[in-house]
Amino acid sequence: MSEFKSGFFVGGESTNGRVLIVDDEPDIRKVVRMTLQKAGYDVLEAENGEKAIEVINSGENRLLLDVIICDIRMPKVNGIEAIAYFRQNYPRVPLIVLTGFPDTDMATSLLRQGVVDYLVKPVEGDKLKASVARAMEQRELAHL
Amino acid sequence: MTASSPSAHLQLQSERNESVPVSPPIRVAIVGAGRGGTALLDVLHQIGTIEILGITDKEPSAPGLQRAQEINVTVYERVGDLIKRPGLNLVMDVTGDPSMGPALQEQLPAETDIISGQASRLLWTLVQHESTLQTELLHAEKLAGIGSFAAGIAHDMNNPLQLILGLAENLADEVDLDAVHAQARDIIDAVKRTTAICRDLTSYSRRTSLRQDCLVNINGKLDEALKIARYAVALQDIDIRKLYQPDVVVKGNPDELLHVFVNLITNAVQAMEHRGTLTLETSAVAGTTHIRVSDTGCGMTTEVQSRIFEPFFTTKPPGKGTGLGLYNIKNVVHRMNGSIGVDSHIGRGSTFTLTFRDEPGTSERTTPS
Image (tube, helix red, strand yellow):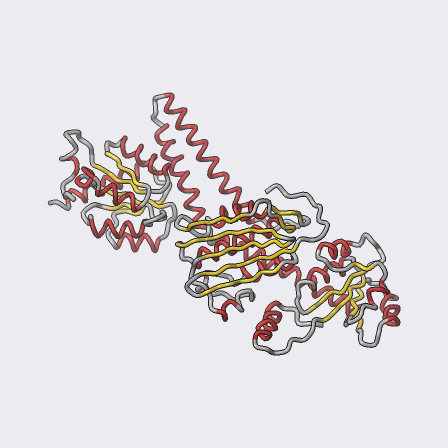
């Protein structure tokens, strides 16, 4: 997967970056898409860890992922396993966890593993956007 | 009097397994079916080592007589007939009538004892105390279980809240009227979803209603229990198989039955560590109803199986289980004149079976499920 920021590659359109939201609730994917699209991001969706991996590996998406936002409590490949998979295979793509159930032990453990942010639903649009922007900066810094 | 605690009862059971001869049940007759008689009836009939040969009261409308019919204890019109039953060990006179004791004493065979007067009153007080404790224990265990719902509740409430928040933030500067209307409708739907969750949970957490037993639609109750159990355990990766025979009903308290099913389902899912197959089966054949909850989890040793119905026995790590779930389930089922059994194999899973026999001549209305 390319290490370059997606902005260089998205057919000439300027977007602020491409984000993948992984959550089994369609409502969540809808609202995250709405919020981030308004802020100029390109948004992809996946309903569980398995689908997320498909999306990442399919076609042109392989080159273009900047941030992954992921829930923990999901069917099939659950969030924790998916996070471990992403950290291992796409270590330069920043991860943000967005979960309905706050758990400080889990949060500390994930942040130690390199997850960029741990957000608890319901999260305000501004906080989400700020978190994604911070993750984008990290992404850029990773190439310097 | 007899050892009446459940663990003593189970000790007798496991003693039976080791080929120690078991003493025959104590056969008792209850004279007087007022509050005292009814309380005695309720507690004593759950104890396997006590056999109630009958109950009688000079007042045909005494509450204990009706209760006796519900639990298949013989009602005698004449006290003389009852106390002359062969094999009767003890007459319990709870009439409160001071002349009753001596009058009965005269008619009793030599091998039959009698308690009356203050001794009876003491017995009645102890029995009521035990009965109150059992009810409190059931409610306490239910509430303790609800604490484990926190993760599930947070998930189910925070998700619609996220949608509502996001839509509202958008509405704050949305100018397209159609979009405003559509998003406002989405918010209304999300609120309704959240309200439904609160309603289910508060309904489940209330004290078990004291209403009379009625016919309960078992298949509907199992489905309801799945909805509640979702808050305690993740069901997404569990295959749920329903083998329901249509229209299976059992006479009982719907709230208590719901609690029994929620417990059995959460135990099953926890045994499977959230992956596997949960099977719910109901059948009613020739007057016998079976309800089975099966899992494909780790299974239990025979030693564990012989102890699981004891109060405070648990295989869960500290803080994770009260050890009261199956004890309470057993009490509820016995109160309904049913039985519960377990069949389990290490590495293959467990099946819990509840068995109820139809009472002749039941003619109550079914509850809406």
